[in-house]
Image (cartoon, rainbow, N blue to C red; front, side):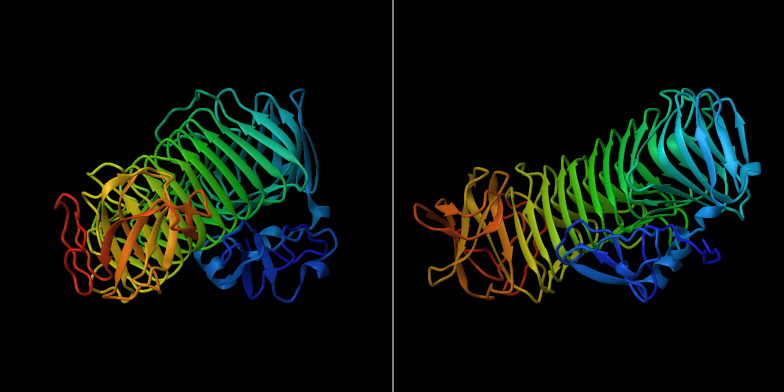
Length: 527
């Protein structure tokens, strides 16, 4: 939104000039959009709200965010003396202020038909907010302690506007609930508690609870930008959807959906259908896919946690480049796939990635590339899937990779890998929770770890693994973690298998899967 700079600013950010400093990227913590530029939080205009930065930061060019989305620094700046106040009430909502002429009240329906900044308070037990402006107009809606339920449709319905901002007033709790059945069920009719045909932004430091009783929770049929706030969505179908794109710049989002959790849906237009989490905390429990994009999905900062899903993360191209990602899936954990000829790739370059999956852990119909970060896969126990599955091979040039799971479809690293790894079939199924240790030829522990799933095959790749050298895989003893990576002791452990770094055979236990040799490829000793 491009608006004149006001004399008195109400904003959730002190400034957004040369860069957006996005918290939680290096350390993988929560974080919101913090500011870097000419105005610090301490120097913010009186009345402004400044987002706090986290421990780990990275910078994103503000021009890039503005260029890629409808969001602009001016979105969160306005003159509060020009606000229009709307007091919602079942007995008759009242309106006063600058743009009162642009508001009409018809029973429980409050319609905003002109550009402006509208501050809403109070509640409607059976009503809705409708935005019906022009395609050139910007409408701001400040939710200042609002509760709206509707018995026949959405709680907030944007029929037409250029852009709409839902701003959550600091210190307030707001609730929006739609009907369990809608009066209008046409194909193109609204189907979500918050439904917008225009670009939609959600910001502010307050909280919002959305109950999508009919189908979806929050839907934009254009672009959707989530800037800040504490948002909880419960939905009978999909949780949060942006069509052209969905950008998460900060805030906390908890989604519980019977369908997909959070996604971008445009599969027709080039350069659209993408989802990017720059910062913030995202927690998803979904009956289908957890986090999804039709084209490109990037998690570069903050935390993304999928506690329940069929497939945890899915898109044609997936880039994990700094976020802390934790996925639990009944099928594939992270799945790079596409129905068309689009490029398919799973790329991990930074951050922390933990996957627990009944299907393939990391699955790509194209290539898997890993150049940084820490990736731990607790893969399947059944022989029809593997911890790693890439049609185009697996290339590791840096970072740390630990993949554990069943043996029948286990896959090794490709010949293009600059960083070596060591892989072994253990010859038995090691129960979940049992420490496993990789030990070098000198008898020193390289790494200890505790898988959360039963394990018959282990692959470990890190900078300290030396190509061509022999390693032992010991089971038992102790580790200083209940799950994941750590240090440990071999006291009470036994050597279960040996292997030579750089030698891989896919389908190691049952001879199934695609053979894929790494440097000096061949069968690992002890198999």
